[in-house]
Length: 541
Image 1 (cartoon, helix red, strand yellow):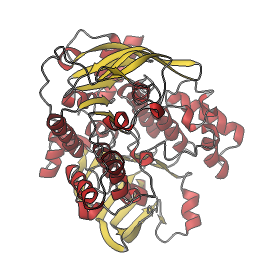
Image 2 (cartoon, one colour):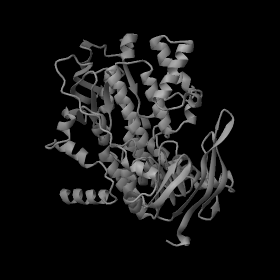
Image 3 (spheres, rainbow, N blue to C red):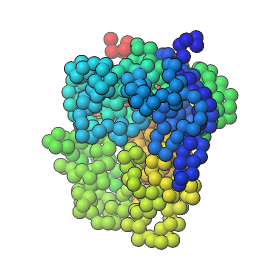
Image 4 (cartoon, rainbow, N blue to C red):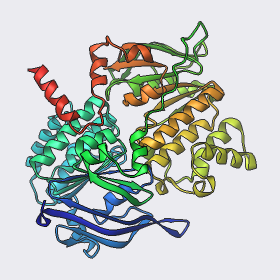
């Protein structure tokens, strides 16, 4: 590519973050160049500066951060020297952003199609009618159900995966020159992820759109990026074209990224006749008048991890809501240590509530933004265990150490001062604070880079062995299932289609739906997605 094709140039970028009125450098002199129609992948562990750099490419610094040095030039426009109104005119029209957490990005009071139409109407790209028609077209390309109607729903009326796809479509509304994709498939199951990655790639190629693709999933970035830049603690480690980077990384840190996910806990021996910690018995549940779970049954024993997998909308999280008493079932029951639990959490005793805790998928929306970390972690220990004073302080610090966050550095921070991965680790510590017997892990590693995710899985394994914990592990990441599960429950459209031990589930023959899930797991091969799509097209015809 020639210099004439350069769309974005960043030189010597320095960004500072503030904590307790003290500024410290979090991005330390990073350079990048992006050509028109090119996709640059940014990878690195949590806190590497990936999202911060992506936002800076728009001339933007999040709350608590400031751009302190360097140049940012977008198509001949100096974004640091440009006025705020000039930058605002670019954002949404020529530069778009797809955030990691769709749930925290949409306005809950407005319908999806109204929020889609806002940018093209404001920027004079198209009128209302044309914008709505365009939205329906892109919803279809994003494989959203009922694309002509789904835009007229509110954000809370669609699943997390559907909301993420709607936001990706919204970013493309003005056909921008540059899109910043910040973990756009984190919340998606593997089958949906393939459709979204394919749609993103098609649109980028069709409209010659440049993109910065931020992710911790190496297999995903292999499918999307022309070049990959590796970051560590705000500094560049190395950069190369994708094939070179995958086949021959030069730096030890990059090699360590490539080597992760080797961890796999030994599968536990078959369960005897002991009483399960949790038994879900013939549960049917509904939202309104529509049944969304149909006769669901499975058991979870002490020291065992049952992974519940399936596409977005399959009923995984809904089952968790029934177990925790947040959604009373129409039929069936949940047993805890052999005794039936009240179907409504309001009727459960404090001890029953303490024994079952939950780690939520969306750390951004699960943590109260006004509370400091000491309060977020300390409140469950205070409420359920009666800890106060020094005992509470010591317990909070111990939990921070368990999740590998230095207590002195983090205990008095607010959630806004943490990275996405750090927020998720706080959610884990908060669940552990009550010393439960059973924990529901709802996509707890989906927001974490692979190095941190591996550490979290090892931590959960250690805690399980030490305290005989039982886990229900909701995930769409089958690599995680292989790492930590003893048993697997596969769900589709509210029905359990297959269940068994991990060794049974990963050996053929499979239910056709299980086979679809297994074949949809991305591989560290830049040609994997192209080959898979060709194979499926050939099979369909």
